[in-house]
Image 1: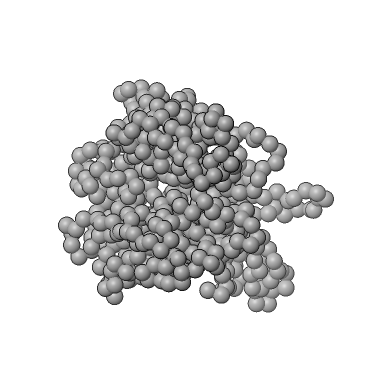
Image 2 (image 1 turned 120 degrees about the horizontal axis):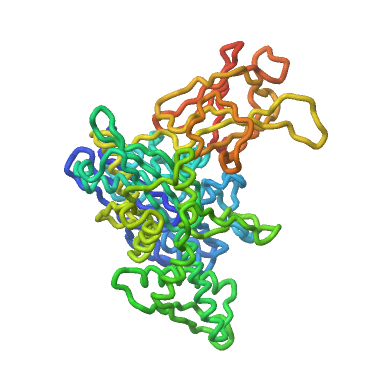
Length: 595
């Protein structure tokens, strides 16, 4: 069946959104899908966003989380689950998307909610992501029974900083949820720019010129993402090329809410009220509401933050303090967007030699210092940091005009009033731009239109162990062989030149992979002996037993490499025997053998 809609899904760390546009009507506008979800036990409402929270109900709560398309559910996704995070945090999964790209845990194992008691059922980051996508799929199918989502042109967005492993795990979750196998993954900052292109039409060519550099600054609920897109000329026409992406930075609106919770907690302490762990979580969520209200244009000057009382003096009642717009702005501006020199680096100090296991949150919450490093690292060798000519804001944090203005002040400090980037204004709510842009992108694939080029955002490498005599207590040196260059286009493949490599077969072996968003000159076959700290980042290592080669008795087979980037943006690495027709494919995904 031919697709009738282009559907864009923004699978956000904090909220998810689904948008669509009819493919048979060139003048059709992109529309949002209202998402039915529980807002209280037994209450279902349509909301424009699906909070990316999963509540694991107790057996006694069965029957209270039914949806129009499913009964007797043991879990809840969306607004009710988000509210439960304040009262029952040990049964609520949050930030699954951040766990999905955390390579130091097994993301296919049931580990969430993290640090929950043993008697609480747990799910894997992949399953949590699957549950969010299942809810969106079921909501779509209920609204469009004549056009099931599995038969539509679906674009699912991921952070630009996701490496091949995190992207493949996202695709695996989508496959399990029942989305089409041909779904396309699109980087979120690109989707935000597509949303702007959808509103401006062909007039974008009059607003931008060859050589312009666009910075997409995306600060969402849980992460910060930077992307640079250059305006270039090809055959006399303008084109857009993504030239750089940043690292996955775990700083966002959630961190801001927590900072305000600390501010409110201090105010409670001045009243002689101490917050216990339960109240502290509730306070965090209450401060999110305060932030959104106080930073809204025309919002109040004062907002009361209230939590349920737990002490003897307030049993059955509530306690509250007031947060003021001025102190909230000062806290967020100085803590997350402080003034700094261009070229400044984020602080990396450790407070203790011991660290609780969990997500790798940033030591330094200053988004401006992370941005300074990004612009410096992607400058041409020996040049000054990149100077963007335009900026595209994205993410819920920048709905606040005061925070956009604050970053504008930082740019004027860095580049002067004349050199600061111009803001590409749009009419879209930043909560929905990514989903809208993804739907528009899908339409351009069918009907034509401007496309952002750039290929892979990272170069990829395999770890090659050096040969030589064994030395007690010392590992053999590891070198990195480039197998995918930065910018390799979808639908292309590369023969990796160089000498033969021994592939271990017939016994357990560990295969190590690395990636780099900054090494843009490495070509397939380049063997990197040493590299500066931070240039290469290890992604998933993979332990497996590859089938033994026919007639092989050595335990290894001489091979050469072929790398492919499929039309859907999937990275495949093939090990091709140099002495036979045998081939082995190394994949990043960790799939359940029963599915």
